[in-house]
Amino acid sequence: MRRVLGPSGRTLEPTGRVGFDTLPDQVVNREMKRGFTFNILVLGETGVGKSTLMDSLFKRPLEEVTHTHDAKSVGCEVYTHDLEEAGVKLKLMIIHSTGFGDQLDRQQSPESIVGYVETQYERFLQEELKTSRSLWRLHDTRIHACVYMIQPNGHSLKSLDLITMRAIHDKVNLIPVVAKADAITKAELLEFKQTLRRELEANHIEVYCPEEVQAIFPLAVIGGRDEILLGTERVRVRQYPWGIVEVENEEHSDFVKLRSLLLRTHTEKLRLRTHRVLYERYRKVALQKMGFQDDPASEPTSLREVYEQKRRQYMKELGHREDEVRQMFLNKVKKKEAELKAAEQELTKKYEKLKAVHEEERRQLNLQQKAIDDERREYMERANLEAEEITKKKDPKKDKKK
Image (cartoon, rainbow, N blue to C red):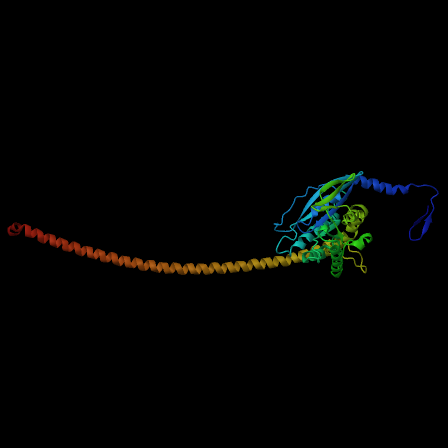
């Protein structure tokens, strides 16, 4: 056994067994005890068969809720399952898109999916940036594989599929598959696959395609929940009046190859690529926005220097913002004062006008009162005179005596 250490190429030749050859076993034991996480984003239009495919992949019902086509917006529903096989523990997280392709205005559909993917990266990044972090205990929710299910229309990609894949292809391990492959003939399926490959290449969409499946890529799959007994084995099938289609029969679909790619041969590769390539790509952009730069010509910038620089920049922007808010407030106060002054002047005018009207009415009332009083006095005088005359006519003797 030989070991080469260091740049000098110094060679050590142990004279006996040391024991560090057990390191792989220690890693295996640690990971077996800790368990694994694997997160699958299943993306496609409502009714394309997402839930059925996941049930078929894991050979058990995963209890997803059936959705209708009346969703008002695109969302993501998360289902977490703890699975175990031969002592290997797997925390499986399946993310289903809901309402995808059900709206008349579909411009926001890709943004909702991208937003969910980036939120999971941001959650992991924020845990990394903590002074006291516990990444080993954090439930990793980053998307390890995105199974994009395409409707088998036999012609080409829909515009929604094309726009969505262009939006997410550099953020997830994109695995496009043709859903419900038994809906078209083999000749139509072969031509459809060729069309999809041309469109994906023409639009520079990066997909996860290992060498062993390049010849038949994209994979065409069938999902089914029915089980029947064929010989001595129970198999999953789709039943039709004319016969059955076996889900795991490679003559009928590429389902077995998809399951092998996701859960057998490339599971760890998908996990590592998510962490080492896709997450690092997001992390680089996020840190650059925070002010971190890798400049080989200069000394590395410390976290404190970056913090102080960002703090000064923030305080400067805050000062400008305070000035803008203060000026905006003063302008609003001046405008309000002018409005109040104009309202006051208007009220003063109305008051003076009403006062003048009131004085005029009062003067008229006084004149009318004076006229009534004069008329009353004249009436009383006339009444007294008439009364005296009447009295004289009734008693003429008194006048004679006098």
